Amino acid sequence: MAESATLLMARRSRELRAAGRDIIDLSLGEPDHAPPPFALEAAAEALRGPWHKYTPVNGYPDVRQAIADKFRRDNGLHYSAEQVVISTGAKQSLMNVIMALIGPGDEVVIPAPFWVSYVEQVRLAGGTPVVVSSTLDEDWKPPVARIAAAITPRTRLIMLSSPSNPSGSVLTAAEMQELADVVLRHEELYVLADEIYEHIVFDGKHLSLGTLPGMDERVITVNGLSKAWALTGWRLGYIGAPLWIAQAATKVQGQFTSATNSIAQRVAKACVEADPALLAPMRADFRRRRDLVVAEVAKIPGWRCNVPQGAFYLLPDVSASIDGKQIKGSVDLSLYLLDKVGVSLVEGRSFGAEGTLRISYATSDDKLTEAMRRVAQAISELA
Ligand code: PMP
Ligand code: GLU
Image 1 (cartoon, rainbow, N blue to C red):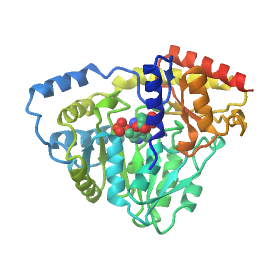
Image 2: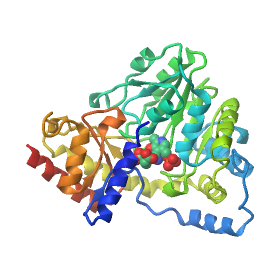
Image 3: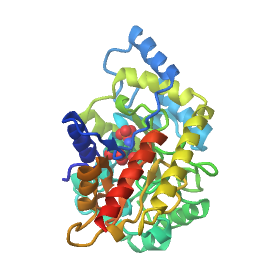
Image 4: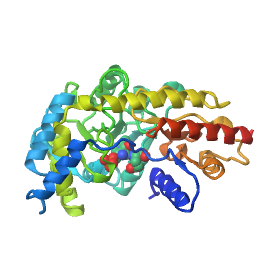
């Protein structure tokens, strides 16, 4: 299994910074905003309460109920509290479901570009990732017909990240419906809908695949506190799923981590009960930064990008800067930029999009401007 490419670049950046280098880290997908004060208050209050012992493996019942209520309020998804499982980050939520559903011989269709961990998690479970590619000109979304063509009798699961990490692309309602139609044509085919960026959509409202007719038995919805509430370190994710899948995920979790940290669960209750309107300023920040980075990328000769509708990533096609000699691929290019000008980006190969680099713009406007100035300078010296 490969080391996570995102975490690897974040580690390198930390190491170089510790060694005294001036590094601008645009590798890690982590909001720079402070967590909301009410969440920290909830944590402080929980410390004074009776929340210090093992919790039920799937999480405290009242927190699962609050999550079920959030799914109904924000997403129109109708999960009962028994269908909710709380885990140590959305990463564990995904792993639990993949371990529960996938074994040797099972195929998982993964539209590319994909989040790095999907492929490795499927491999860890013994399954076979089946990657379906797309191009920048397709807005980094494989047409549903291409996804359908990759489905075989052994396919059990399709991974869906919308808004997407790493491209920021969002599936339209029509594309969601097309995908649902394909899934419903196959028995025992499920979709892991990773909605961790649901609140970072710039135009229109996020749509949950599980709300489409017939899909409630086919979709596992994943979400968490990391992105919306800037609580990456608290490690809290959750799923809503068909009951048997929720029970199987709970069984897996019971052997790995028991339950999630009790205090983080109390914080989760406060977050899912909070008004999502509180997130509007954060969304506005990300939109402004998206526009900033898109404009800077457009100035670099040969670099091309789309205008993502969500999340906080840009995935420019940088193949014009790959000459096959000094710079053999996106890995070389990311190492060149880190070494030459101290800007840390993630190479696209690990997202299934060789010839690209991922820019996480979840940092201040000043840092973004300076980072893009340095990148443009380093690229001009390559030519
Ligand atoms: N899914 C996607 C698409 C992500 O970008 C991330 C990274 N945060 C996760 C899941 C995992 O999030 P968490 O921090 O909750 O484990
Ligand atoms: N999901 C974020 C990213 O893609 C955080 C790092 C990770 O968990 O991979 O950068």
